[in-house]
Image (cartoon, rainbow, N blue to C red; front, top):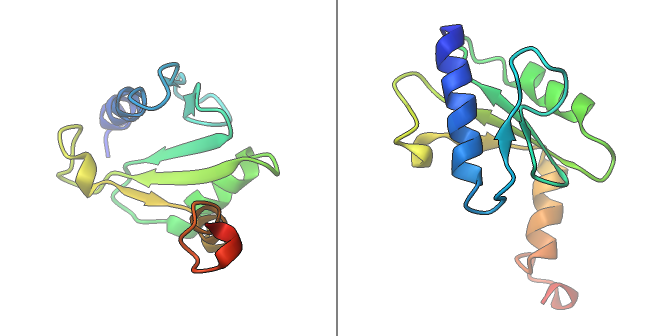
Length: 113
C-alpha cells in the first residue's frame, strides 16, 4: 500500500473516533506508540498493507499498550476507504474482547448485569 494511503486512513480513523473521543488525533508517521492519541486507555495500530500480517500487528499493538490499556489493531482492506468504516476490521486479543464484553454485561453471568 502507498504510504499516502496509510497516512490518509490513519487520519480518517482519528476523525471517525472523534464522535466518541473529541480529542482523538492522528500521530505523525513513524512515531512509536499508538497511531491515534486522545483516546485514553486505548492503543490504536492502523494498518493498510496488502500483505495480511495479523499476528505481527497484534503483537505491535500489545507492545505499545500498558497493562491497563486496550490494544486495538485496525485493518483497512484493499478497496476500503474512509467512506466505509463498516468494512474496516477492528482486531484485539480474545482475552481483552471477552473482558470488555463481560464488563458490558454480555457474558450471561448475573454479576455482569
